[in-house]
Length: 398
Image 1 (tube, rainbow, N blue to C red):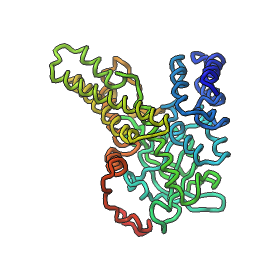
Image 2: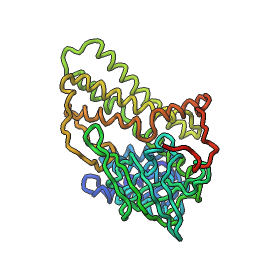
Image 3: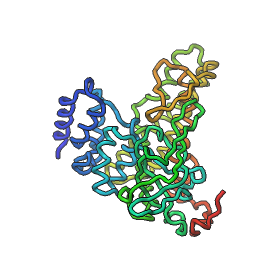
Image 4: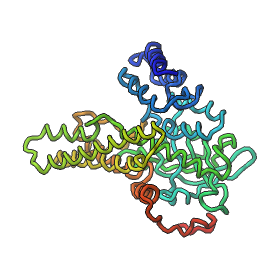
């Protein structure tokens, strides 16, 4: 299939479903049917079996035409569950979940982290016990983005307490709307509750919704987490000078009497954000050539801190106005990233700064990211792991 054929499909999509007048869910469903959801996926699964770099061309053309974006609406399905199902799921699972997920008719979340297993995910204690053709799950998950609006979840649970911690895990899909699943909001420093804690009490899921073999959940979860890093890379690939650094530039221009020290800090932040953007582009090009390098391991860590530093500069520029946010009402956002930020909403710059702190935790903490870079990229000695070969049941836990 040629690039011209891709453009024909894009033209057909835009002609039959004009973005200005088409319901977003209908538009996304049509995009999926034409193979323009994930062009690298197989035909019939939202793709065309093509080079993944062509997806960037599709996205750019659709964005230029004013098409709606579903990334923040269903980030967990688009960037994580979808690629995992195509790589390791059954044909039935792919057929059932990919299209309604891409169309955002069904929203997804990720039930991985736990109060005692955040940085060390393999230490999780949520149990899944087989009961005929079903599995019964009991446990607690935490820091679950958008669990309060999710219809389905990826869940990692322990199915063998006598195996070493990485080998006793199994990966499931689970219906979030069933009895036995309670979602409680976690109010954040910005007043909102994008994150949640989730309690599973005799929640059930059929064995047909197991992804991968019993006990092979860690390998499946790594597939999900690797795709999460790539998805974060797409978030970092913003136009030059956009996002928080763009707000910082605007605030400097609006305020008289900005001294050289502030301009120096603005230049440093601009350079930091530009380096992240260029590294993201380089990582994408390396992946497109089939020779991925260490850049992908750098992006998530650098992106979250560069974003936070840029918002922090914005707060400093607001002076006493930086003590306020637009409101302290308890909100539960329905899309990832919380409230939108307009160009003139200076009080919400402060809320955006507070929100950015969560980016250093979500998707893997910055401390863990540094460990990954040190051990897997730089080849430094790993930290001692005294429980590596112990059965999970023998591992000390708080």
